[in-house]
Length: 588
Image (cartoon, rainbow, N blue to C red; front, side, top):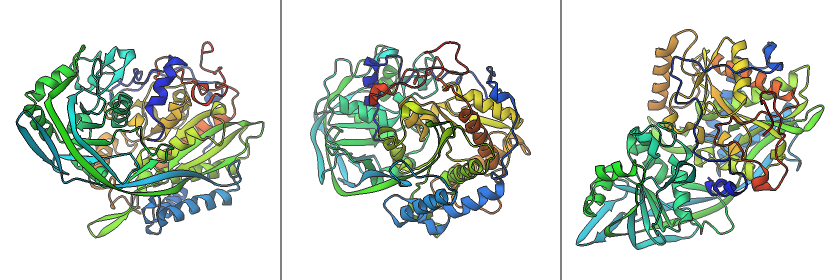
C-alpha cells in the first residue's frame, strides 16, 4: 500500500508510544463462546433509540442489487466499471442532498499506476556447483513496484533473514549484523509468535503487522535489498498457493510516487515451500532447522551457502487516476469535527470465466458495505435530529489492490485528521439473517468498542472478539489506514451465531462463501439471501455514529493498543486530536 510502515517506524522518534506490532488486548483471551467484559458505557449510550426506518432489508437489497449488477462490470478501477459505479455513488449522494467535498466535487482523484509484469519463465539459482532452475507459477511468483520497462536481478547473493522483522519493542532484529545491499533476502511468512512454540513472542498466535507481506517488502527495501522472497506455507499464511498465484499474475495497481518506486526492491515475490526446501538444501541448510532457529530469541541471519539468484521482469505501465467517492452531511454545532463511514467500491472487474460467468460482481465483497453506507446516509438525512458533528460518507478505490484509496485519503485528507473523531468501516457483511454476536476485528484497540457494545446491547447481542486473529484481518481492510494515522477505527459485524439457526449453520454458510464465492464470479446477488442481518449491522453503525455525533469528547486508544500515541502531528504537522474522552480516566 502507498502509506508505508516506514512512516510509522519514523514516528518512534516523535511518538514513541506508537509501537506497531504490540499486543491486541483481549484477542487471545476470549473464546468463540465467550463475550468480552463490558466496561462502563457513556451516559449517551444508556438510552435506547428507535431504529431508523431508512435502514431495512428492502433498502439494503435495493442498493445491493444495483451496485453489484452486471452493468457495473465488476467495479474494477481504470475500467468502464469504475466510471459507472463511482457515478452511481455520487448520484446517490447528490440525490440524498449530501454536500460534496470542500473542492466542490464528490470525487477525490487518486493517481495510480498499473504495472503488468511478465516475469522470466525461470529463476536461476547458482553457486558452489549448484544449478537450480525454478519455474514461474509452479515454484515462484515475482513482481515489482518499480515503474520501469524492465527490472533484472543478476547474480544477487541469497541470504536468509528469518521473518524479515525489525521490532525494537520486542527486542527483535532479523537483520542484525547483516548487510543485504544488492542481495536477495528469503524470509518466512507471518511473524515469530505465530508458530506457537513460545506464546510470549510478539502477540502469540495473533498476527501483528510485522507478519504482513507488505511490511516485509518495505523492511527489505529500507535495508537496501535487491529482492525479497517470502516462503509460502498455507497454515501461517492463512491462504493456499492458489491465492498467491492469482494475485501475482494479475496487473498490479500502485500509488504513483515521485521517484517511480526507485526506493522499492527490484524484485518482490514468493517461493513455494517445496522450492524453498530445495533452495535451503542446495545451500547446505535444513529447512526445519532454519525454521526452528527463526522462531527462537537470538536468531542470527545468515548467507545461503554462496548461492546467487538471477531473474528478470518485463513491465507494461499505465498511469491513470482513479477516484474515491465522498460526501458530507454538515454538523449543526460542531461542523469542523468529523465522523467517517467507509466502505470500498472496487472489486475485480471482468476476468477469467468460471462456469460461464466472467463478471466478478463482488456482491458480498463489498457490495454489502456500499449498501450499508448508502442506507446509513439515508438514515441520517431522514432523522429529525440532525448530527451536531459532520458525517462523512467515503467509498474508496483500490482496496483489493492494497488499501490504496484509503491510504491516499489518509495522506491527503479533505477533512483534518486531527478533527476526525472515528472511522466506522464496513467490509463484507453477511447476508444470512440476524446474528446474536457482533464480532469486533482487532478487539481491544479503542474505546469505540464501548459504543459498539452499548448499541449491541440494544439489539440483544453480545460482543465477540476476532475469532481468527492469526489471519491479521485488522490489517486487511480500509480502517487500518485511519488507525495508521491515529484515528480510532471500528471494523465489526455479526457472523458467528445466527439468531435463528445457531453457530453451525452460519459456519457452513461462511465456509461455502469462502470456498465457492470469495473473489469469484459466483459472488453475485442472490434473491434468496436474508438481508436482515446486514440491516441489523447498519442500524448498529448508525446508532454508534449518532452517539459520537452528539458528544463533545473524542474516543481514545486503549492503553495496550499498538496505535496509542500515533498522533496526527507526527506525520502531518497539525495539532493533535482532542485529548479528552468520556471513558478515559485521565487525559493522555
